[in-house]
Every structure is written in structure tokens, then in C-alpha cells.
Length: 176
Image (cartoon, rainbow, N blue to C red; front, side):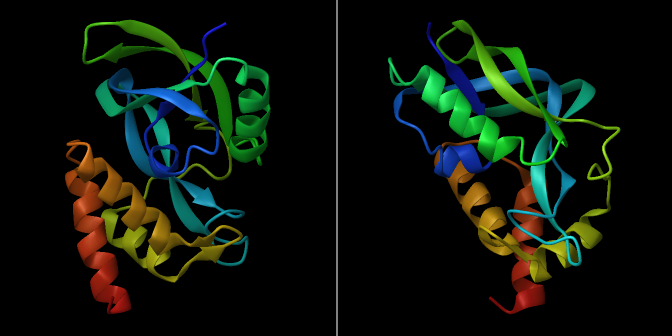
């Protein structure tokens, strides 16, 4: 069994499993969005942060990376990802079709936000910046998550104007 995983945020820079192939990928019908309160990894229940999630939106397209797990590590990779991504029930695991730049189509595991979950949110960019600037969770500051994701998207040539704006605003708020 070949296991592909869709990386659109922290999986870009911290997959946490052995990857033998990376390919630029597009997922139709979803947008990358800071629409999930983080109460574990990048914030707390008292001071939640925000993390990116795949938000179902008609006509949207999320660019990211298809990551192929090293053969023989599929079960361990899924177990690791489930522990990491399903820490709360805010995400659900789904098989999605990715369109790769070399015209291949692959089935991949993706973690998608449940729009009915209490951690789901839609906030203006200004409020997102305020939350990200001050939040800190078990995996570190929310600013680190934002900056690493934006930097890695830029490195692989995926523009995200909202993330660029958030980086500038958060740096201004934190005087970084």
C-alpha cells in the first residue's frame, strides 16, 4: 500500500515521518485557513492560539505538498499522524484526491476541520494576528507556527497573501 499525505501547514516543515517523495499538489474544494482554535499545540484553553486547517469551500483550491511515506512505514506513519492531528476531534481524517504538478492524481490522507466543532472559527485577519501574537502551547509559540509555515510555502513557490499579511502584522505586534 502506498501512503500519501497532504501537507499544507506544519507537515511542510515538520512531517514527523520518513518521506521518500515530495510533490507539489493541489486539493480542490478546500482552503488553507486559520479557522481552528489551538488549545494543545499552539495555545491553551485559557489563551487559545490558531492553527491552519483545510476548510471546505466551494470553488477553493489549496496548494501544498503530497508526501509519500517510506515503504514499510505506512502503519507507523498513520498511527503517528492520528496521535498528532486527532488530539481533539476538531479534525477528521479523510482520503482526498490530489492533483500533482506532473499530472498524476493520487489518493492521500488529509486532516480536515469539522465545521461543527467548538474549535472551529472564522475570525477577521486582525483578530487572527492578535491571537497568534500572544498564544503559546505545548509545541511552542503560535508565532513560530505561523512564521515556519509562511517561510516554507514561500520556499516552494506557493503564494499565500493572507499568511504574508499575518506575518507582517504579528511581527509588528510582537516587535520581532
